[in-house]
Image 1 (tube, rainbow, N blue to C red):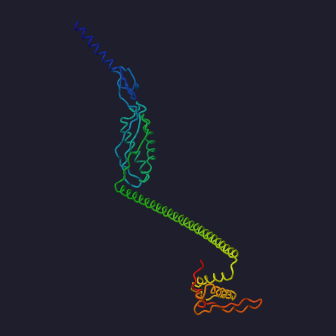
Image 2 (image 1 turned 180 degrees about the vertical axis):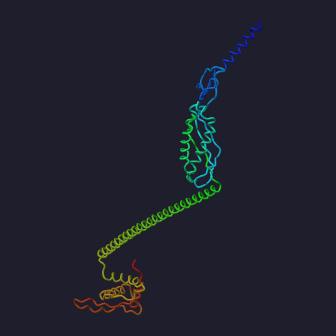
Image 3 (image 1 turned 120 degrees about the vertical axis):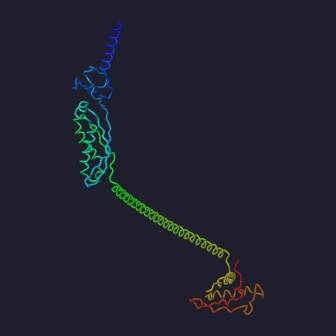
Amino acid sequence: MSGGLIAVAVLSFVVLVFVFRAVKIVPQARAMVVERLGRYHRTLIPGLAIVLPFIDRVRERIDLREQVVTFPPQPVITEDNLVVGIDTVIYFQVTDPRAATYEIANFIKAIEQLTVTTLRNVIGGMNLEATLTSRDQINGQLRGVLDEATGKWGIRVNRVELKAIDPPRSVQDSMEKQMRAERDRRAAILTAEGVRQSEILRAEGEKQAAILRAEGAKQAAILGAEGEREAQVLRAEGEARAIETVFASIHAGDADPKLLAYQYLQTLPRIAEGQASKLWIVPSELTSALGSGLGDLSSLLGPGAAVAGQPAERPAPAAPAEGGTPPTRPLNKSSLPTSARDAPPAG
């Protein structure tokens, strides 16, 4: 009885081991290469798979996802004999697990060495400036060479990127000085352009201001002249109206010669106030009228109206010849009667 139980237990253990080794579960984006009796048998795809225990053996577990591998800086000599250190990053993907297992022993190492040799061939035909400014071109050439070489290994190179290009320290210092000088030059050019634009704008502003000031002065002069003209016109019209009014009043009042002579005597002192008014030409008719008028005024005002040193009556001047101009005589201020020189103006 005990021997039978032991046999059943041993048989159950063997079955469990057989089932455990026969059932394989392949994760997603993975692949398993199976060998049967040492030879390639098949490639297991993701999911549940059954293999024969002790006959089939899983050789490799391959990751089918896109992988990224970076390599340490590699010294590369350019065409102008400068040593630069270049870091590369490669994106690749296994497309054929069988070829990646049997065609190459270590495809990561193989890709690294192939990248280094290809990079040296590409950079060796370019100078430093072209190397620094032609990354896309270098990436395209590297990708083309690597993809062609790794195709038979069951690997597809998707992208190749140059992570860093480090020239020698002395070259870096020279490049920094050159870039600093270039920046200073551009800054000086921009400053000069700004100053030029500001000067142009300032000159334009001053020009516009001068034009506006001139226009304003012109308009002001025109308005002033028009105002003065209007004032003179109004003043002349006022004087004309005043003269017309006085003339009408005189004719309406029918003033006699005596009153006119008296008014003239009152006006003479104001005429004599000027510095150049030393001599007047008075018609003889006016002097005769003044004489008669003064005699009448003296008779009206009484004996106190006579001026000292002057006769009360004066002989009338000789009558003018027929058809001739009345004679005139010069009249000095000192020859006027005192009453005529000192008489107040007519009110």
